[in-house]
Length: 149
Image (cartoon, one colour):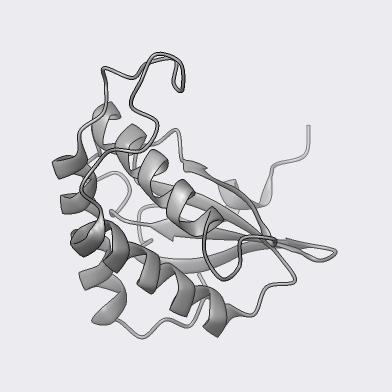
């Protein structure tokens, strides 16, 4: 079986940031690494789930809403994947940064926090989402973002 590209990255040396994981035709997959892998500092399920609800909603309501194909957590609990059609790296970073700020400073309710909207709606926490978004925003603002692993 062929090894997938993301398994070819040395996760022992990977740091937080934003990376282009792969490009397939007009779709770019971004690795939004919020935490260093294999350092026992993982997001708990509630935090991942909460960030997913908040950022997915804000991103899909924003400037690139017609080009956002997917936003969701990595199973390893160290980040998220963002799939964007016709992506421009600088524009994606600008929109992502604005979305993080929106969650941190403007959101007062948890999106999708009912049994009708979510299959595990009791496992959501707005404050956890805000804290994780603040953590990631700080990373992005204090690092040169080359988009390369």
